Image (cartoon, rainbow, N blue to C red; front, side, top):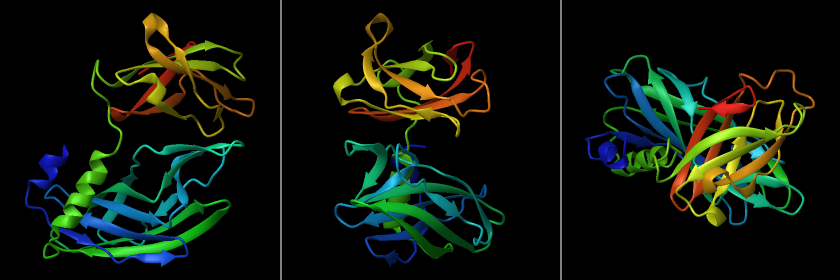
Length: 270
């Protein structure tokens, strides 16, 4: 659903209190459950200047965030989504990070939309300046129809709109992923895309947990399409290549788009 469609409707919302520790603070923001039992919310995280935290796939170094919503009542977390990160390379390792502030949309299923909801999250995240510090924070928010707050509604809708989507065909999209060489222990893949300046594009690669993707390098793909190539280290992998999935997120001047490919017989098809 687009941003305008979300915030143009009469929506109730609630903003929870900030909880903080040194260099970071966080809170929960939520809209009122819909009649269909869906509740859209968000985790807002603010960092001290110069500090960063990590995407769901942190890259060569870093701490993947973990969120526990088991303390919630009348609501079950379905998913935490993420906007596209930044690539941070310190000369030794490249990580996928957020600086300053990030808002992570969360979708919940509500058992009884006519009753109050309490959202409760315990989060374990890593924050870094020069060295990384593990941080544990817990925060909650009570959601009821009387908690109308247009600022919270806008924040939640904006967070949802920032999640990478399927792209725009022919304008800004990931076109294909195929294997282009290498042995099964270290296969090489090529991804092609359309609609963004190659020198401003950044590709993020997510593989099965026992695969390790190298940093994508820009190339000229088939038929002149811009692309990236990357090598995957599978020397400790237990599964096969065929049937496995790779999720790609492309960030450029056109925004960000994400697509999951299933590998088969050396190629990958969406």
